[in-house]
Image (tube, rainbow, N blue to C red):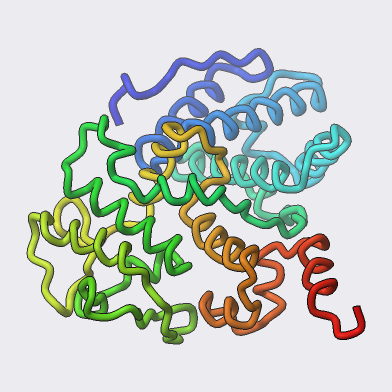
Length: 321
């Protein structure tokens, strides 16, 4: 890692050695782990808050030696302080994950082992639902023209648009879409079903729209790499396997262009598929099959059925209404 990549950080609550390692850690996360700027900002903020707390808790500036000797009671006290500020469980979990990451970084760099961090249980987090996207926004994500201003090759923009159209059009997990072989995807007019391999190596049939197949065919026609029948239909910039992270990054860029919230992720497209089908009268058990859920209760949580929708179904379908 070049020195230019390491930002300068000053900490009132810790000595310069901690500030230097913190800067190197954040630079490592950005360059090697490719974490988003927002995640890096959050991790940095969480560590600062912890160091400020420890400084007040111990009555002296935090040194590397003292931080490495951190005790479980110190960590619990910090977490309790954050809880007292009405911080949500998910934010507490992120804070602990960031502190553990910093501790592992220090250990790899030979700066001490912060064993107390691994002894703390992660806080419980209430199960939350991915937020569905508006129908119009979901459709625009599959339009390569939305990214026309980017300095990217046309075939890559076409590829990303085809993948997102598939996630929304067929409700696939991103791993299922990227795991498709070319021979498994029919050309437009030659079929309307995909056989995908989901969790637990279970296969299922899902319908695929002709306009989605057309987008895939557009990408295939201009892809500069050979796409043999037994190989993956979606490939990376160098012709190898396409990483899910690449699609996630493409989604992040589109979020900014379309003014969508951070909750607009590739997985949100799958959730939008299910929610939009349900809102248009789709049968819950049919949606369960399409999503590849083994339990109907999973689909009920996943699609975020609200009481208003259930009351509508009740009022229209109950025989004694």
